[in-house]
Image (cartoon, rainbow, N blue to C red; front, side):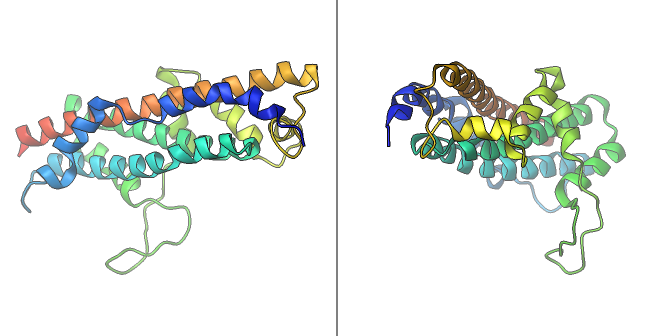
Length: 237
């Protein structure tokens, strides 16, 4: 089996490694603003409660995303390119949900419509599409927010629906796009084909750009959410 795929694809690895690193700003913010560090007593204002629940939701998504970052590198290094869009698409969905949460917090702070944002946060915290039991008993009754709403929330910063469509195409049981990813690594490596080489690098290059922007966007939004929420809670009580 030819190892040409390693030569052709290894140049992207430093970009991925750089993208998945936790930046110093967020690291400091997490240490200073982690929920357990500033969770107020049992009696807080309803507005503060909503802000804290947004933080809890965002912390959960960030934790899952951050754990998924190394998987992208591992899959890349082993040549399992056909699986990479699955992981990247999930992380991109998390990015959309985090960005949606940031906008929700910003509206709460700027407009003060507690009931409106409470309704949205209820769906973020407790929404499901299938039967799920609550820790205290009973079943979830809130309906989760459609993932496309999260993706569309990113439209203020990028062509999010095109990006999501690109990732989804390689995840669905369709032949052409999936085949291109398969041909990038073993056992079907096709880098000796000049026509594929041009197409393969275009495909992988676009994927890496999405990884870079997604990881960076998640960290920026989480950082800003935690700082803004803490300031808001301290002011509201």
